[in-house]
Length: 107
Figure 1 (tube, helix red, strand yellow):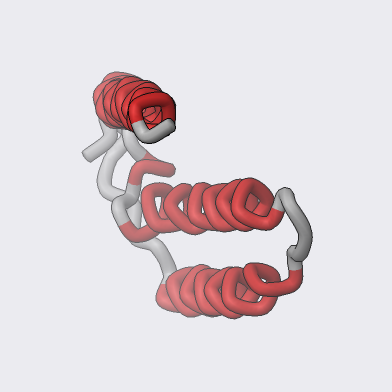
Figure 2 (figure 1 turned 30 degrees about the horizontal axis):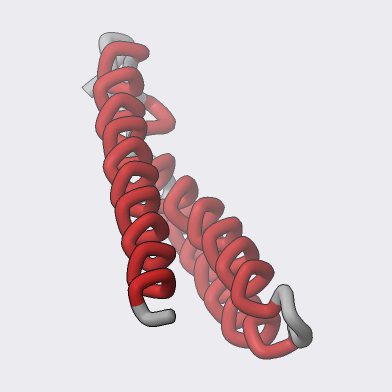
């Protein structure tokens, strides 16, 4: 835990955060099919990832108690997510480069 002592989060806060998470889940379901046209896949992905980022932040801050932790724990937690983003980025580069190679061989 943090150096300042043990922090007890009120039950009401958990209920509020849970309600917000449910609202964002409903928002994800409602907004996803509303985007139409050529940019549909990109917009759906960006909207879904944005909403998922907000939901993950809420879970990390309140349910995993990172809001009340010291800076070292925040840095370690953030470094884990940084390397996850690096992994996803390089995986996406690999997938997109293979897709172009397959299309050129198929011609």
